[in-house]
Structure formats: structure tokens, C-alpha cells
Image (tube, rainbow, N blue to C red; front, side):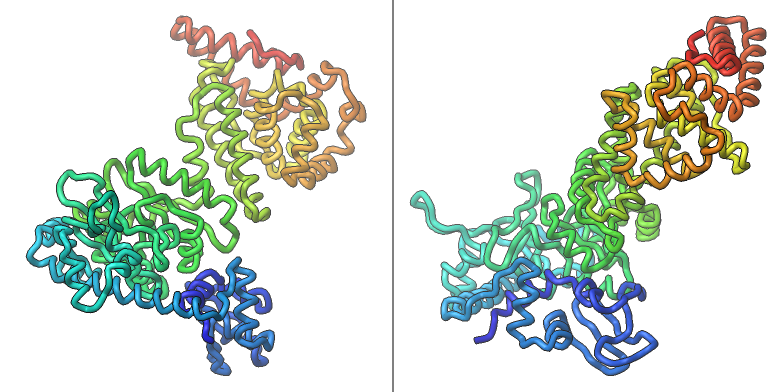
Length: 595
């Protein structure tokens, strides 16, 4: 007995064809698809193309889906190929029983019932207040027809009576989620009444449920149909059937928040727009998106709810992203949503919005940093959260790249803080250390390496030199070590060399440490690596720091003195005294910068 069509469709939907083929064939990107040398005949020039749900070789003409690929590549029978893919997808192959056959027939029947309901709702729209509402929202008649929008009626039995004329029984309407069962002595009643109706279709275009919007101020504003044998809210995306075709044509896949956003964007020419069904995105929906595009754009409203939604998606996606699939983020301004934006400003404005999309690492950093206080404790907690965030990424190569991007953004923040005088710093409001462009000369590199190695072997020094250490512009790869060490210092409970080295090892930075150690091996006194006296380590550290920074610090001291001589006020005096103390510490090798 044949397997149910619904099971096979779900199996194909859960199987990444690109991932399946990529196990044996080296694939490269070709537009929105993949190509490689055909595994079924010898060729030197790639002519084998892998699409979202099919493959085709333009050389030998072979064509098929995931099931046929497994059959051909492994020489498996159809049942064997299905069992192989089902095991990988975590699905159980239905037993070929009469009950299973009956369930599949019922599922097909449900599809027919839902299609008939959609047609009935459409017939009610022209004489309803729903039509005026949709037109007032800027939708054309063509768009209304394309999305099969309708009106539910008053819910007093019109749908039940209409479908009864086509021999649809009440129990089928209940199973399809169109009618609620009788309860508390009341008769069965229709799920939707006095609402604009939005048919929800699966990836093949089959109606599986509905969303209904009430007019006026009633609550809830939107209602979706209940879970049924053909409808799972966490797996569906509104507009998915249209977005598949648009993605194949090269349009961007854009995730928005609501039905009307999707429809307005499609009308404006953005055919890749989809939306979750009134809830936050789920892992299953992300997988569906990645079947359409390796980098879909998530577009959120500019209000607080949009910010929270973006943060939830970012956290959800962390264990799921990889080098082959990621996300881009867009936040609209103020109270705008995509619907209002394209109605008021047209498609060019939204196209500009999409062009401003930020990659995952940048957007996530900004979301995590939003609202972070200026205290040392808040900054330390923020850095700790960043590191914990990257630990959730299962693709370790990507995790390392994102961690590096985080370090660079921390550096930019720190540079900005130094340029304006960070609140809470012991140098505020004195003139800050100026970060100079890193030099690549051998002498500078060795002194920079000395600075880093002394800190690595004497992390206790950071209690007195952390601000100065942060101010030095180091060349790579020392700059990355500098950021990591400072982040560790602000979060560490015990300043222990072993703990620091273990932390660097965990972050896969041992190679950078070995590079710096080799760079300064001939200049680094042996005692620096073996429990040096704090004063000796500090003296050597300040010698390196002086070598790297003394010219610019001297300029800052002179400028502070000139301001004090001119203004003769408390603020300029404090700046001058602070810079004088800094220069005294640099020149004498002292480990304190207090004036």
C-alpha cells in the first residue's frame, strides 16, 4: 500500500536536499541554488544543479527529489530510501494498515473541506464591511483575489449550511478547525464570525487553516484556526507558497510580523515576504526559511515589542546558524511597520530598508548591548554575556568568527569611551590615552608583545594598569588577546595565570599566545614567566608602555597645562594634575596613576 502523500510531503520538507547531496558532491553556490559535478555520470564541468526540493543534471538529464536521489546513489528501493530519510529526519514511517489509509483519506478530505470553506468566505466578501476595510488598507482587487481574502459572515450557521449542501458533515468541520464542538449544552458554533478571513496555505498552496481579523476595537484582533491533522501553527509561515516562487526568481526572503505586512509587501513587489502566525518564530519556521534562502532578512517593527521579538529570534537562532545559513536583521524607525511604510512612502523606501540590513553578528551585539550601563560591573556582565552567547553556536568555526567580530565591536566602543571620557573611570574627566594606529615596525611589535606577555604571566597587574593597557593600539594578533584578557579581567573572581591561560585555550587562542611568546623570546627576562616580584613586572611593563605611548602622552600633558593656564578653573586643573601623574608614572615606572 502506498505511503500517505502528507507523510511524504513532510519528509521532503524536513530533508535538506543541498545537505544530502553535499555529502558526496562538492557543491558551490550558483545564484540561489547549488551546482557540482554530476554523481551519476563522469564530467569535468559542473552541470548538476540542486534546487530547494529537486535536482537536475543538464548533462545526462537525470532529475528527482531527495527520495529518488537516495534510491539512485545507494541503489535502494523506494521503501528503503524513505526509511533512511525518515530516520535522519526523526520521523516514523506509517505502517501500511487500513487505519493509516483511512487517516490519509481523511486528511485529503480535510483539504477539500478547507478549500470549499475558503471559496464560501470569498463569496461573502463583496457585500461585507470587510471589503471596504481591505480597500482602505490600500489593497487592490487583484491582490485581494490573489490571496483569496474573504469574510466569515456572522457565524450563525451560514458555513455549516453551505457545506452541508456538499455533503460535508459537522464532524468534518470540527476536525478541520472551522467549527467548535458543542459544550455546556450549547450547540456547535462556527470558529470565525464577523472577521476578514486570510486563508493559510502550505508550501504547495493547499489551504490548511485560516486567520481572521475582527473589525473595530474587539479582542482578540486576530484569531487563527486550532491545531488539526493538516495544520501546525509552529511549522507554517503565511505567504510561504508565493515566497517559494519569488525566492527561486532571486528575490530576497523577508520575514515580517503580520498578514497585512506580507500582503502589502507582495503588492509592492516584494514577493519573498512571509510571516509567522501571530507568534514568535520557531525553530521549525527557521528551518523552512533556510530552505528558501541561506540568509533571510528578519524585519521587525520599530517599537519595543519589535525589539523584544528580534532578541527572541536571535537567541533561538544561535544553536541553529552555520556558515551556510544565517540571518540578517532590519529594524524599522519609530512606530512604522512594513504595511504603513510602503503605503506612505512606496517600494523604494522599503528597498532602502532592506539594503540597510545588518548581519547576524552585528545585530546580535547591538541587541545585547542595548541598555547596558556605564559601570564597570555592567560592562563586565555584558562581556560575559557575549562570551556565553557565542558558546551556544554549535558551528565552532563560525563561533570563532563571531567572537572576533564581537571583540572588534568592543574595541570600537572602548575607543569611543576613551575619546569622550568614560563615566566612572579614574581618569575622568582628564584627557584620555589616545589610541594611535598600530605600527608594524619590528621594535614596536616586540614592545607590544612584551606588554602582552607580562600581563599574561602577571594578571594581577591589571588591577592598576587595565585602563592604560586598554588604551594601547596593538597590531594583530595581539589586539585580539588584549580584548580577551581585559574581558576576562573584568569578569574574573581570582586573577590567576593558570585560569587566564585556560580561558585563552578554551577560546582557541593558544596559537596567538605562542606567536607573541616567540616574538619576544629573546627580549623577555626569564623571571617574567616565573612568579616575578610585582614591582619588577610592573617596572618592565611600564617601560614597554612608555616606549609605545610617551610621545602622545607628552603632547596631552602639554595641552592640559595650556588649558589650565588659560582657564584657571577646577576642571582644567584636575585634567592637568591627572596627566602629570600619568607622565610621572610612565617616566618612573610606578604602577599607580593616582595624582
